[in-house]
Length: 376
Ligand SMILES: *Cc1c(COP(=O)(O)O)cnc(C)c1O
Image (cartoon, rainbow, N blue to C red; front, side):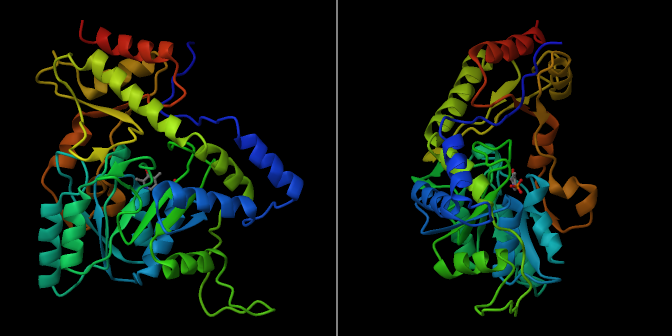
């Protein structure tokens, strides 16, 4: 069997172990410590966010963000439909109702026009949504200018799901620092990883301080254990934060490597009939976390996304359909949805290609050759 070519695998730099060794030497084996503080500073600096709390996962960060916005049972939260389930699950944790918004063609992210329609209709029904969750899918920034304008017109806070978009920029501003709050993920498949982890970013000190308080079991200041709130165990381990600090020393390289994968795929596959890539709208820089293609079977001599995926699988090359929209997921069936068919069409035709920053030139060539074969 040929060595597996992964979709996106962890890629350590040279500094991670040094930071972790330091953790062992100082015996800060805990969900707090100097590496946690240092990783938070690194993230603030890189994203130009005023405040950051590193947490056990991106999902935990989103859960806390919604708690801080006072999302409660029966409340509605507007959420991009085309995304990973972790964008919507925290809404359900709180007994709130996700209202799914379909995507626009230009970014594959939340369609601002549908968003505004949805808000108007929810208001007519007498219910004001508590939050808006746009996602920067595969690293491509959502149309934040429009989304933020609508959000401020109706005074609804925005929580950016930037789990896939560390290293992406919108009009010069880092994804994750464009809304009231933003979340990041450092899961094993993301552009940088701490094995598992996440962060909450905000320009509001209160929000981030409160998130840290809730994430540390909500201990009130007292010599004994005193609690006036339900707390969570959501902080990041100092060991993981050490890995994160090492990864932050190579983030720019990782973005460069992923963007160069994308350029290579475009150069090699761009001419194949029926294949299209998502280009960056004016003013947007995508970290190109994953390179994605659309395969139009009407123009591709019968090659479909699925025949292509299976052909690659046979060669031990991992590829994956795009995210299946949340409004088509059994677990969210019946959730109010504002759709335009875009996310469903993307799911039909879209495929994520191997995109790791540690892919070798030979591996990339192998992927491209196998894809080209299907057109012969
Ligand atoms: C990975 C991911 C998350 C969740 O992050 P975890 O750290 O795995 O909990 C949330 N949203 C999106 C869009 C993601 O890709």
